[in-house]
Image (tube, rainbow, N blue to C red):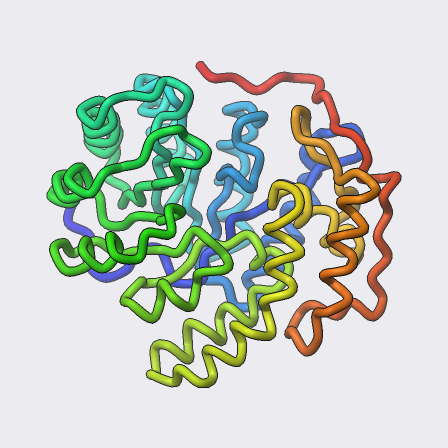
Length: 325
């Protein structure tokens, strides 16, 4: 299939998956949260990604998240399914099912734990991209997968008609520039602290964790860059900095984002699934200290912030376990 333009959006939220106190997916909260971030300016939602706790979601939950996302978005934002699998056959079936469920695109992560060679990575991505007509975002995050997608491999993958973009979490700006010069791939910043630098050298947009809490400033940054107003984009970037530090520095972004969203009253529980656990007392204190520095960030009013360390403590064992097959 030929894909024209940008089928993903520019302000993409790496969506948390709201859960009940016992670790089951809180479907009404999922619907509300998706609507909240779209209303705040997101034009793309990545469900079942790292931030969505893909490793501990069942395939049935992943597919329902796509379906719910499509229903709630109602054309206002693209629904991208993330995650995948470190087993190529499973990844193919999961993405085929996601396409049938209505996904607008897929984000394929480098196979993790197996530590494949570049030839294995190339084959994995090609076979998954061959199996669907949906546009593909490659997800390059060696800190989690153990292996990077090397420059030469990216160039070869860029020739696939369905592979249109890459989410970069390596922070290698020279490589980003090199790939942008030599391919037609769209780049999405996968590091909340580097959104503006990525955009400044030609990235298309972002896939962000902090955008769960405050999507509006990212919309403002992207819109400012689109119209060439670096000063306005920089001002938003500076206002966001302490919030990004609170979310991304002390505990996994999923954990801190849920802790903050719950403290703001926007989700009913901060619960995460094991092996993730809520912040310990000293970690929660560090997050709260950072939040004290947040001012004038649209959508992030902390004057009534009510964190609940007890509710966040520990992690949940769901009734039905996730699967790698």
